[in-house]
Length: 256
Image 1: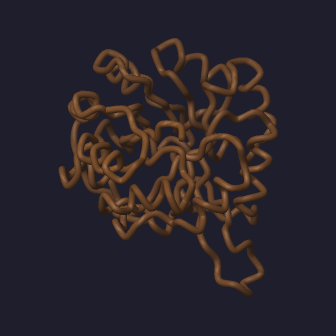
Image 2: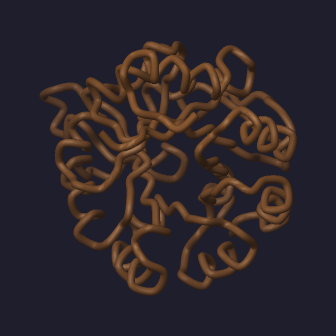
Image 3: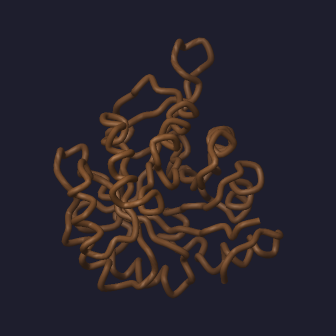
């Protein structure tokens, strides 16, 4: 079994790391650089930094945050939010980002995935997929893709979109359940497993981590290749080191 990655996520707004529930009611968590350094010390495999207001505010990524992060840590980090073109991606790579993550832009313009994969290679391209569950009989996909910070339904079936994303050349998928986000009630296992079993590229589970057991479930039941969390890490409920030691104690391969 390949090593499972443990990844803290820094949702950034107005220069601060924030965290909400179901993409709403954001509260201040900590300073970007302070958080990144702490997670590196704890053994995080990677960090994801998301400029969560960029798409909603119709602007590009705040480059100054990326510059600060690149100076603060040596572990790989991915940047998402407000990326609309391969030139935007190049600018982030030039500042030190290891990967870029696209979401709304990929749905609006799927050709961007192929263009980016061709220009930079699949290993540097993450496609983030935000999803929600619909009631059976609603006339909508059971698992539906949402964009623009979760505010816009697309009518796209998550599994079908994930397969298309893989065909177009993405190197990995960052899958977030809007319904579970920030609740600490656990990842959406149904959604995670459905996507992980449909594609051959790594899938990172995101949204809902509240306990160490939830991380284990995402890997074993959800078939995730990596687990991403925010609230439990930001507010000191679980450390990255604790998460890794627990997963290893349960037979999951991780890098300590």
